[in-house]
Length: 373
Image (tube, rainbow, N blue to C red; front, top):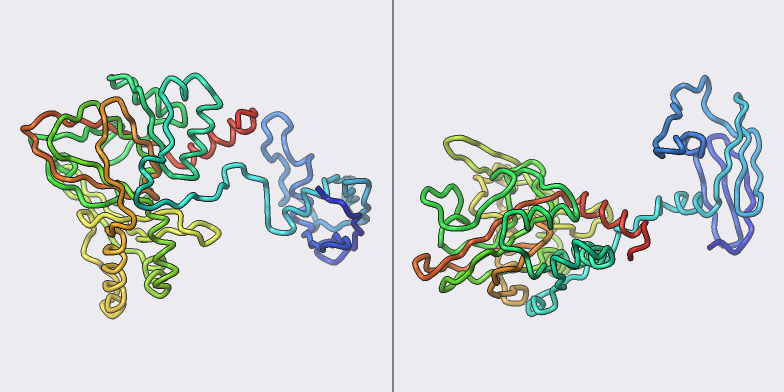
């Protein structure tokens, strides 16, 4: 909340708001375009077309009135009123408040017992529980849903709490069990190296749901780690190698008789603030690196160094999935794998799907807006 009065000074292309504590500059185009009258009051979408102005917007006068700023515009019969608090937020680069911008809780080995758990019944029927689940997904990148129904519908119903099931390479849903003619290592009983899913898609799925329906085999322990924690440690310890992996893209491919998926991705993904938001890791789907060969002189050692760090005991969490649990996790941030198992020793069946990360954050914002936080 603002506690000191502001003065306003008009300039050629914008105006300056100044108090004893701070000074912010605001462009006239931005001010005119974001006048409250520019938006439809029912759907909150912009209806004003700034390109329709005959001349560039210029303030004729401006004055502070309480906590507001009133601007009278030249060349048109129009006055705009803004909250000074809002103007200061945008003028200092903060922008629109976003409840979904939460600090990531970076975790390492031994954290799996601290994964937040919620029952399917609660997240489907209690909006406060659903809000807490969505928040855990943003901060921890993972949560466990318990007491899942043993049905296909149970997975769909759960995913729809946060978004719509989105198709991927495998379709709307995928089944992790031994296939007679597998097209993916996940569909065998072999060990599955640490990876993020479907890096061959131009925009890989954001949130993965893995519903454990059966797991009575010998072996097959699940392996999970926080890729953001690994990468931030790697940045601290090896800044030059970190820069290579977060700057250069490498190719991935997934090629069989009926499909041929290809993409280029950063191994380390950064968000708008420069923080690590995720990884793209999949040695079994990595194509021959097509960077210039002299760039590979530095890139390959950095790549190998990072993967060795990634697989270190400092980060790995190992546990056995239980029937009736659904592990929900950020497919960009959480790197996962599996130990080999003996297929003839029992049954192991996981059913999965994806939603987009944007839908997760949208659902969380809507829940917060309705005061369920």
